[in-house]
Image (cartoon, rainbow, N blue to C red; front, side, top):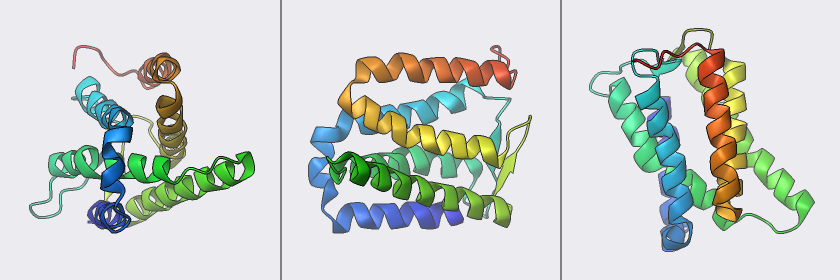
Length: 167
């Protein structure tokens, strides 16, 4: 339920700030963040490092679908649209978005709505939250740099958590 509330908040901010008008500009990056999430679901099928508790009709699969169809693209566009130019302001802005995602993760963990397994922990989720915004920014600036680095991190995480390739 918490993930749905956060998603609705990001969607409301996306609509109220009329950030949807910038979707054309940031579409490749919004698609990138959604596809990375989908890639996790496909590669880790049968060995999910985290998943969401079912909440009535709101299943883990529906929660995941809502995230990569709504939450991640809205987050990426909102983040990129207002990204400051000055380095200090950009760093503080980055940390603000990162903090919102960490608070969301902490709420999910404390409420028991997210379940970690196979050695995954809140610390790893915080790392992924950091990567989400770092790679969102990097992809928007130069996707040719972002793709191989993000692929390297995916390979590292799959090896570290011994994710079987045969599903």
